[in-house]
Image (cartoon, rainbow over the protein chains, first blue to last red):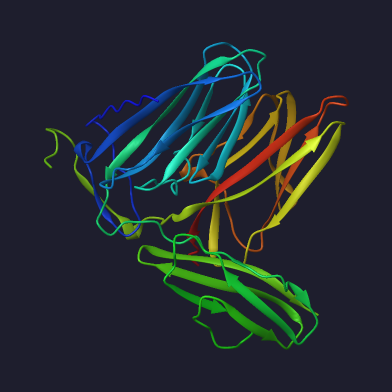
Length: 222
Length: 133
């Protein structure tokens, strides 16, 4: 699949958490990637953009899918295999990505655009992704996405719960707040006993070199 | 790098601005249906000290057709659309509605066909910031 890159020095900058960026045209560059898909009737095909440039942060602005015939189709966008949006239309779709400041792609990330041809004939589709990129600071990377799982969500006192950390982007430290007055714990996975009935929102704070994220879930002790 | 002649040069200081937390946070589901019906999903915003800002709600139907969807915040309607093909609500980041514990969001979908088997897909995307009291 062919890809073209058009750099535009007249781009514009983005703000980054914890960083000072200079707001001038020469700081940021626009990028454009595109390709054509041939999709059989009732089938799907995927355009993948893999980021290999380690020197920039990529902010996708628009994903555009245009069929070369005025026919029905669906498109699904995935960011690092996480579903981001699904659309169905006839003429074309323009999907705004810039509304989410957390959509920041760096080396190793990828964006997939899957196109489903709902027409009765094989059709061609053009997929275009454009946005801006800025120079990646040396200490910039993905902060964790904190999350944990547990199977002991409800139970009578004394209630023992096991929480297993499943955070993304490799946290290096963890802080568990059980919110029952007991001390915080700092291991990756924890076991805790609630002795008094109530609803406790266990809070996980996960941290890596690039940032911190929080996640909580309610546990009911009867 | 030098500025262009006449170009206003200014500095944006990161810590003074909202700090998006990556990765993106999402809430979504699918609904396979072949007769007219109403379905809804509820989500209580977690008690995690974060503010959830909505940057995208979309509703698609495969195959396509007319659709109705609505979004409620604490049982009050905040968004509604009746339209064919795909439905999207993508507020600009500076206008994004923000939610925090103990808010409750509800998504309501209406399937308006009695003899049309489809798969509805809806999704909400958020970014999160640490709540400032």
